Length: 160
Image (cartoon, rainbow, N blue to C red; front, side, top):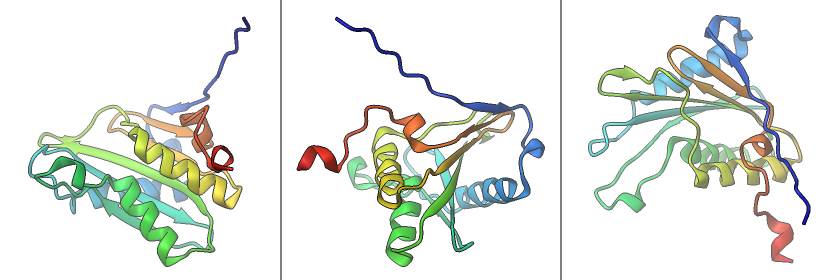
């Protein structure tokens, strides 16, 4: 038996004002997108903002449905829109923010497994790391690539 370790590196900021202006803008766009969330059942709003290499920013929010599996997370709405509108443009970064009825969540909320898989596929598609910014009210996490969020990922190599 061999023991292998997987190490994930996350940069934690106590305040968003320590980030670059482009990252702050992306966080603000993600927070604004929370206002467009359709979440009448969970009352948990998520906003995502994607920065493309061409400078475009795509914002999206989660969209629920009474039949829960029919809804879609903000991250996937943003990525699918970006990939369909700009199919040949790589994603540089994504910011994700979450809120409930009391306001923005204090700690950064990571994407679900399905969203991580979609982000990973996009990262692999363009062969470029996607920086992930998780924005909480009191902390911000910065992760240099989706692979850091989803080690041992399933990808197209397994389908050959």
